[in-house]
Length: 215
Image 1: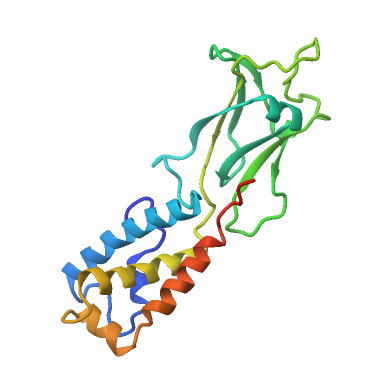
Image 2: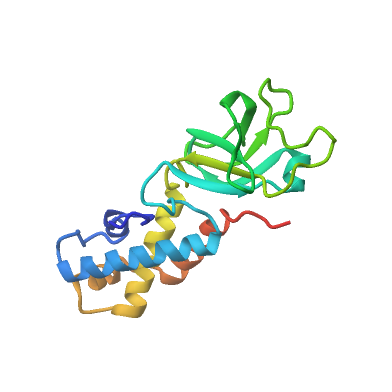
């Protein structure tokens, strides 16, 4: 199973009773390739990072702190699985400007499902060590101020609906692009009358619900 796969072979074979992983090694290899392809496609479709880009976690990422972030004191960070282990503000020259503690920011949303990631860091103005985003003259510090965050990225876990969606699309790809008859897997899918059209609609509807609206 590749690092960024959103489902396992067992999730695929569960939808095709009568076929068990190991029945046909060539088919298993093909299904695993399709799992990797459909997992990438699902993340591109949603614009979400269900599994993190970096193979090693925690990982360091940098975010520009522009005037809008400074004014609203909210930094959008994408999909963040857990609280940062290190949060630093640096100048455009890469010099350390400030190290922030957990008391100086709030991760949003506060209330989440067990699989749901954080998406935004609210830089509290009332904290004792509040992030200094404005100069003493009242102007935005600007000049390339960057937030460097070391954390575990992606989702805390892959949602069950996403696993199911990718598994269904893998079966559709196999039956449509590889073969719909003559292999143990294809014949098993035929015996259970796997509904390709219904599975496509169900899978894409599930994935589209994870898209973040653009304003």
